[in-house]
Image (cartoon, rainbow, N blue to C red):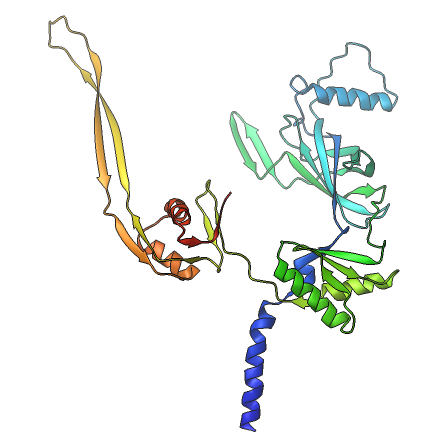
Length: 368
């Protein structure tokens, strides 16, 4: 009995690491053709409390207002100069989700393109939203929701959050559907979020093992695309749902070090390793300061009072530290070793680049 318990315990321990690292296919890949589309429009926000565009500096706001009034049957006399304070020109953006149908409501965002001080309390007038092909796919209108607040008086100004961008939940109505290729042909194609041949092979094996153990229906076309034979009609939706929830162990990513040169942040994954190398680290600081003094001539002399400058130069050199790193060390050991010699994130930029150039760092170095 004890031997049987030990057997099942060993089997459970062998399975746990695999299930802990397994991910759903839904999180690793997407179905070709199932994608969002970006929409863009230009419109006017009215009803602002004197915080709209200054018409002398944003003539396009005046032109848009005159054009809108003309479409509503209001004709202004030639040469009329409009002094608008409650109108702002905005760009309206939205994301049209996959399989959106006419009549469906989507969220929109309105952003000021002029010099309006605030869009708080404004109303967006009817604005057509177009896709990349120039066709109108939605119409937007509604009251803006601005999460900021601000006030100004006597030269003082207080502002909380951003006032020149507003959002309208369900502010646009879909007018045109975007056709998809999901229901066409005998195959669907899964696209990995990141190119990896091993993950593509494991994903295809998981689909064949779970859904068609006697016939191969999935095959990787390359390191990113997997072709899967799928049924037609409504059964295809059920089939894709089953695929999305299958568990796959993705391959370990390649060793990579990502460096942000602007912020000094360094991110390394677990696959980073080193060859035997030595790192010498030291700081040289040069401080130059200038003191300005006044040279005063002696009494009853013909001298003039002049300014003189005196430069002080101070050079400080920290003691360099030499660190020996052994071959095959892990990420934690690399970070701990570099921190032990007092390396800051900015120092890591130069150290890691030098280690990569010398061939001691086994990782792809990416600078963003």
